[in-house]
Length: 252
Image (cartoon, rainbow, N blue to C red; front, side):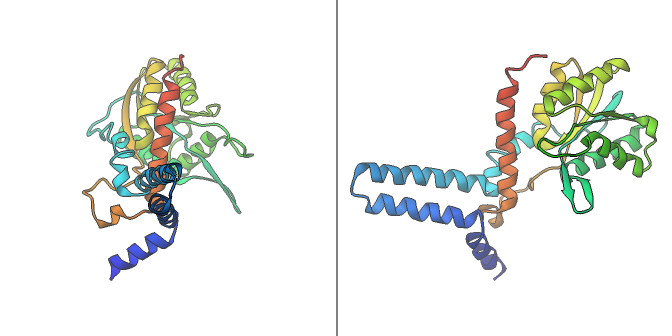
């Protein structure tokens, strides 16, 4: 009964309902269309339906998300000269600015590493585009200070607007301190693009992925049902693939 309820809920809510409408429209055009271009339109819709279905399910994470999140495993031991944490974003609520869940997940891992290694932490991130906010790096610093990290052990890089600039401006800081070997903390889906960016600026990177977006388990019934969680995770992966392509043409 529980599985039946999950199935009905998945079909009657987005993105499942949108996929159902696409499927019905595609089948009607293929079966009822008398002209070839109408049937061809139905086939195109059917292909689009399959693509959207994959984007919206745990099945699709095996195609889009997991190849990125599996690019680097969590190291059992770490050594470096500094911990660099990349920002994600800020949410502006009724009470003011708050770090989003991805940034908090990254900071939580960096805090744990700092407590183990006592290494300094570089937090990097500028304003949120299109919003009037404080630099995200300053909010990240405050989050760490509230949890007992000493002020002198947190270095703020407040200018970077994207991953490439995270690497560029953080590498400037590392050169000032003669650091060449860093522990890089960011979301697992984002790690491949981040590592390549930092390496392009001459740093040796130890990747420490966190903030995994979808379950890394064997496929189950629930993974065949469309869900917003799977859709958001797979869209993040698609965004990363596009980012990797665009960054391939950048030079320091």
